[in-house]
Image (cartoon, rainbow, N blue to C red; front, side, top):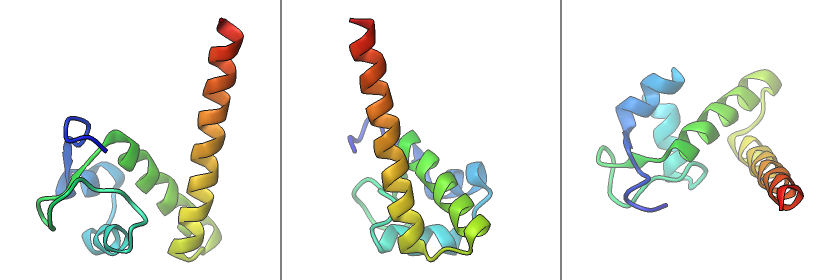
Length: 93
């Protein structure tokens, strides 16, 4: 993640996703949600991290999934999104 892309603070991400601060801190420390270099509370988050946090929280709630499983599912969904975008670009050429 580039410093330019990291625009949200920890508190802003929590508010944007309606997350508990501790929920987010644990997942960042476990490496499941990316944050720009620095220590809590100076972390900065990209819009991609915002989407990932929302997706992971929904997976955890809907399926009572462990954080690691939610992160794995989020990884696969992000990869599918990227592949679909590549197909769209390839079709447009």
